[in-house]
Image 1 (cartoon, rainbow, N blue to C red):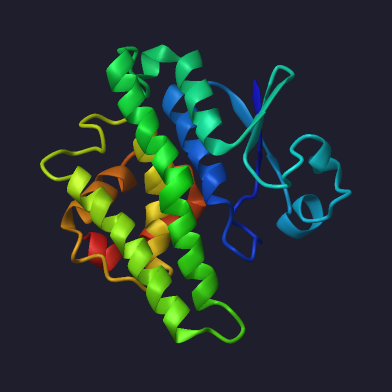
Image 2 (image 1 turned 180 degrees about the vertical axis):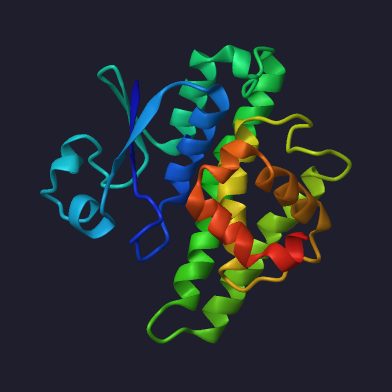
Length: 219
């Protein structure tokens, strides 16, 4: 039984941890037993002396405990779960195909999510600066353009469903909460519609709530 430390949607001011949702989706996909250790963002994660910081010094989620093996960082968790359960098909064994999937997982953490967060923080600043909001929005839209181009002519990011889709999809749907119009990115909207229908995704309420906010765009 894998223990997952996760901030769930209910009662959380930010609607839950989308990074934690990535782990939920992957665990549902591979079909292994897991239990969620639900954390409170303010009480369990923020304080520097919180007990959870002894497990994950960053004070963020997700973290998994697999029989005493502690692992944090969502990208590393996705790779570990896929490697530990190769029959899931979430990570190819072919060296080049595997590298391609991991490239997109790394892109999410290094480029995509930071661009989204920069835009979010610019928008929600106490006194938003119009120039900063505009520049960070443009940067994030640039990453959406990259993703939309990658999805052209194929159902999933690498041509087949993988941890790259989990890593990026769980974050992409936040676009709707930022009030963005994704109609210029039809490949992304079609992709999100496919992800939304998967039972594993429906086990992640925070992401499904984001999808619901964009239901008119997704269709």
